[in-house]
Length: 243
Image (cartoon, rainbow, N blue to C red; front, side, top):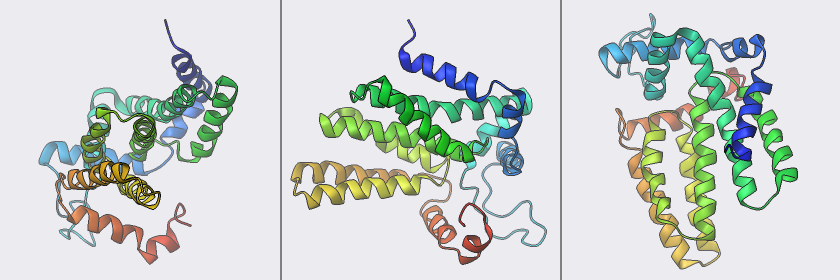
């Protein structure tokens, strides 16, 4: 039988994308197109190290730092067209909200608290309801935090699945940098509370996860590029999301 989170996921999908305009809105950002185009290039030629598209910077060093997401989008577009890309986007929009709802129920919040909290989170994130790689980060963030919460309450060997998850994440979207910061803060918090075993456990998790992120086409250069991107004054002044 379907569980309450299963029903919530289905109803959320229907409520959020029950109209044609909602599906079209998922494709309302021009970045979706170049993610697909980059993915097509990757599927045909491999992950590029130099700019294959630009006229003014042709041949300059270039990072397809969301290469795996790009390849997924391109493959789906090749098989099902933009409708398939929109369906993937819709599923990725609703999945983290359903996971949050299930997590809150497991923590004993009760449906009368879990439901409005999950819907509030969905509303807050709705500005980013676009078929782009960041949606993978939202899913992995909620799943990762849930597993951390479970482990802090009762240690589980499943905690170590977060290491390959982080390595996988580093090839999907730059949001992995925020996840590494969260793991670091967890280790620092354990040290501040003088919880030696927790510090050893979560410090090791943070270290192994950081090493796992080096398994990408660019190695440690990816990390340098991410932090240079986040620290760019020009981007902060001209990109609306940063403003």
